[in-house]
Image (cartoon, rainbow, N blue to C red; front, side, top):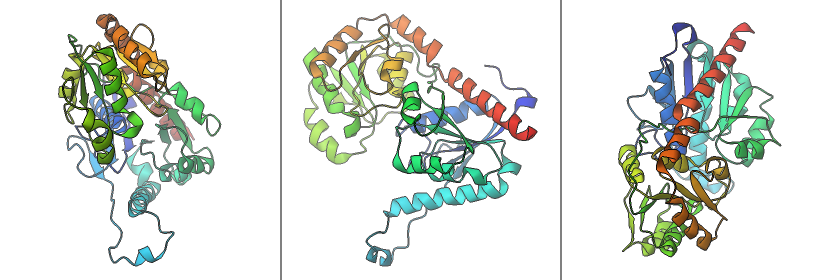
Length: 364
């Protein structure tokens, strides 16, 4: 994609999640998607400001979201209905940002893109004079659904998969803009004798089931990712480590891409309806076939030429999928990712959406 000409150059505000910094190693797919989107928009010549958690990538034009703790005198605890301190801090961070955008947004930005998962950017969209795009990264959540119902059509919505768009269809219409991966950084690898599992080590990702299935398949497994639920890790993952199963830790993207590219198959085991399945797309970009549970959006991106699907929770079926997927043509898997799952394709679609909204707003 060639850089934009000056007539199409936009001033873009990206709103990120305020809990985790937008930097490597990424905590999850949402942080990775926002980071890659920002970098690609900048590379194309747009002016991009990212509102994100402190400690985010200094190469981006990051403005820290002001997440301030509650006063520590403890008097609020006398009210049994007081929300959790972190929820109040998040609320005030986004409230402060949206009030600033309501006052000064039109002088600073042509479009605002909300990737925060928080309800306030949506609820306050009618107060802005600049177009706002919200990407739906999750199944319907009560607090976000409530905000959409008072949005009054002020926002434009995108969904990361057809599955997610369908899940939200009873609440709001959305355009499907599937997530994309940087196929230059997630480069093709030679494969190898082991399977790989990557992601957050939390119950809803079920890495313990990947371990059990890989052992049934007779295939060694390497896990990679951050431990965000220590109790779950100690109870369900750590006791299964050893011998043919290892944990590589929380890796930066280049090291993770190298690991995935040297693996025979990537195992994906969501215990919930995955809204997209970025780890599957990353693996395919490396030419590594995927063995996954058929949950959420994974059947959209893991077809028979690039992987094998198993019924959710069926370890024997997943073990068979691991063995079968490892025999697939790695060049064909990589070609599918480049054609269908790339960052370039995703940013092309968002860029076209931004331009259309900015021009409509200017003409109004």
